[in-house]
Image (cartoon, rainbow, N blue to C red; front, side):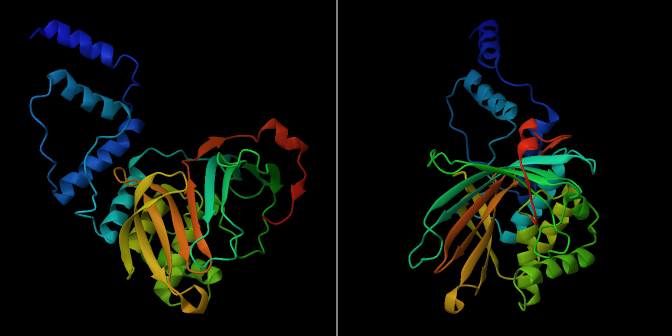
Length: 320
């Protein structure tokens, strides 16, 4: 054993790794807290490995922003309510920018539609990648850039400026509106039920709330309200866990609720998909017999003051 050589090798091994900042380590901290609370035991490590390999694995995981703690497996899944409680903690664990009303949230939203047995009206498989610049207070047009997918590089591409129409009740609220939503769970539960009733009227209260949850989470939500929404969803009946892939192909742990919205009362399954380690929201899925399967993913938003210069040549379209 040569300690000087070991230290030199270790330094060379991680010379090109990014510095483990608080932002990168936040998901790791969430995962470790979750592991401690649930009192799961880590799998025994294999013995006989070189010290530099063991240390290297730990440092590599930390610099990537994730500690490889087993928090979910097919043999011992967490309950759906526990997944949502962990998601609520994750929503506020990572530093989140506070945009001004006159700024934009810039993020990517990916959607994939697949046909399923018996489906006939989804228009065939489609994959849409959308880059979005959303006005924080909704006072200016949003910019959408629909890009060709990797699976269909010759597919259609278009860019559009979309104006919000306040009289349209089926639109998601602007980010600044969501920021004013109450964090009090009783009041927020009522807001979500109202939102869910606009999406699918005349449903029972739990279904209206769940529909409101899924709809609102399809765009960026302030962390405080996002955490409260997850806590409300955790108390709903009929939720269960399963393993699903989001629209990017990443496997996650899903919280699914079943509803009879398919043709002839067929059961549909609508899911929220979370990262297995950090419990950050990745996206969701809706599976409806006779209509097919739709997957979506959303990235963490960035803040920008202005739209790209090329957007000035676009004509505004009414009613987003």
